Image 1 (cartoon, rainbow, N blue to C red):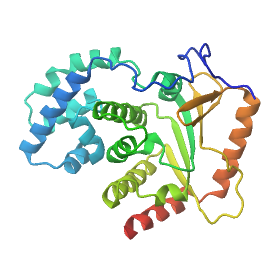
Image 2: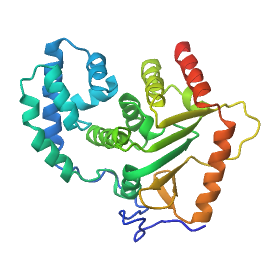
Image 3: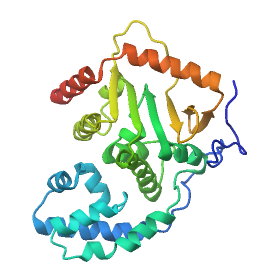
Length: 300
């Protein structure tokens, strides 16, 4: 099997993929202070207006977890959000005034993920198709703010608070792919056990299930659940991702204990894609999956 591993490997001009696993993420891009300050301003104005995070989120087209992330500066406050917020929160042009600085900061932002992850993160950010199979935990793009924080805070060896916040911010920044236009085609096959594991306790778990339901309503996103009771399964190996980078052929990505493997050999990618197609056919339909997630939410 041929795969992209170690240094010196590239796909479509995207950065190198190595197997070195650093203790901390790549150096921050220097714009964090701007978005922390803006987040505090938005929170102040929102509370002055008497709106909850959920109410404000509904007005600007985001969920409460995303609003929370923006107000804490771990998720980018995009120009269109600032424009809406300025009007909704009676900011009097204050938030619109900083749009040039925000656009400049976004233009020079570089990928902040751990160095070994940069190549995949770059491919993911520009992909036209993304397909995920998860057999153990909730995939990063689906994770709620609190779920992601629990995942990083409980991992071993332990991470310090600054590193945890950085990792959470990096993970949430990837989720802006759902806001991109043109929107990529995104699909998931999740083992039922992923829905049953109550990471963070009932409240965090309930919020995580609600996030799945919200994302599953998007026109370009399909979430399917593979019931635990199935008697046959075409893939009892590890989780994997399939993606189609813009202007390039499909590639596959797997990871074990922090060591990445980006597979570009088309015959090997075809085999993984074939298994994924069979799993989609065997899994519950998107509407059936939604009902299952809703039932699990009601049982909490």
